[in-house]
Figure 1 (cartoon, rainbow, N blue to C red):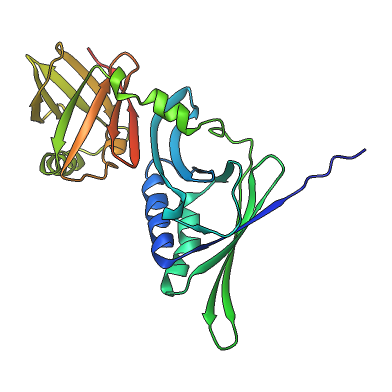
Figure 2 (cartoon, rainbow, N blue to C red):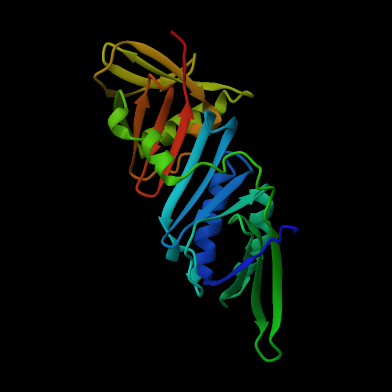
Length: 267
């Protein structure tokens, strides 16, 4: 007997503000990698992007975790976890940005296969109220065999447990701006920044410059990391950075998102 694939349809709406917030996160994640993964369950949405050929071989990883009603108002019950894989987040941004022209809500119809992967989402918005003229975009989910599908919130919380960090330090918004601007002067392909701890003083910089950041409880060490990923940090008043020296990464942790960057020990 042939196997019959059954699709489930989930409908939801997105207000202009919800769409705007969703696209802001998508645009931010594409600075890491064009591939975006979206996992949604009855209460929560996980968005993430990473560089690497598997979750065990990650060079950079950035994610957002937030309540589902922050980006959509669901009309049908979501009883399971569904995954949408986006091959090109920059193209998705351009395709959906047009819905921000109007103040009208966007009506969405999501088709999910029997393995809970999103096949497609039809976005529809009334543009001419009198004759109900619409603007529509159909988004197709990419190949569900893509890497990263096994990553979940529990995995992220386990890997990024700050209690397992070796030490942490705070970078002020003004110091981050200084680091970012100065690093762009010496911007070469695959260039790196250094964390240097010398006699408890931690600095960040490059060969020709450095900026002292804070005193930390750590032995003398020099760590390097890709400059491009560090510059994707979204600074608030300060940035709390955790160093996982044994696991070779640093972590920038906020209430709703995390940024993990692989470290290499130079000395």
